[in-house]
Image 1 (cartoon, rainbow, N blue to C red):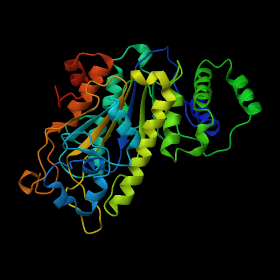
Image 2 (cartoon, rainbow, N blue to C red):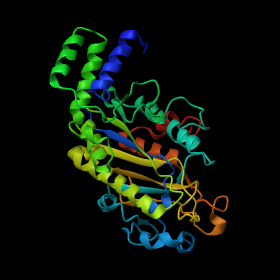
Image 3 (cartoon, rainbow, N blue to C red):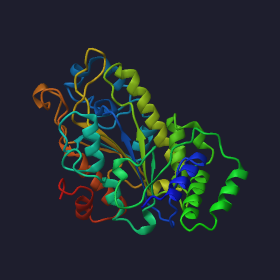
Length: 372
């Protein structure tokens, strides 16, 4: 899109009155939400391998808490803060993929997140993201994409249009101002549809936008309100941060996971019957070290766990893990959980199943050079 003085002015006015714009779309059943965990979430805390004989020795003070969560199978126990996730797992609406990682093998947050979002073969090797490329595989009425973020994240950047939404910190505009601006743009072929989109996004968000997304449940309700209507978003990315637990991990990750759990629970409640046609993917850029450091935390690692939620999962109620073990000889570089499955493959398989697409074409489109 070529920016002119007129479009820049309109964008500034719209941002001052409404926090973002959304694209209207015809009804479609399928919805997909990607929740990124920025900061490298600890998969060994999310789904603890309590059945691994080496776990107790390497995780020390974190073992007692891990044992109080919901048992997923003979090997894994879900973190106790993930109460809604445990209920979804029991209902076969949650799935855990463990010992997963992208093809990235270093430990830079920036590079790792770039690889997770771009789906490329090397950091900064691509300017577009796997989610935007995914949109090209969907029917036109399923491409309405939205990021709950200040700007479009890399995963959603690309050839197809994407909007953003951020809860406004500004006072709500009064009805008179809105009416005057609507009248001003009524006959403007360029600005009128943009303005109408901004108004519609604000209407979809309702009153939730005033809380600035500080609570997981509020963020989940906001996301659901933007996706549930017939002309709402069908593909969405939600950003979460502060997963970098170098110190005091026990209390910090409990708070983080409780927020994530509330987000997922509110999403299901808010989407109602549409939940059955919804896929939620939760993933992080890499995992954390197996051993606890001197500050009661963990450092940057490699393998981690990813979570899937939704009403029609291919393997709901199961944990997928070619478990490498936590013994010293089994660790990557003598310190990390060794990944035994590519995160890219896991995401591609989930997307192909959710949309009933050809798995080969999905892998080729989402991860060219990595999976095809």
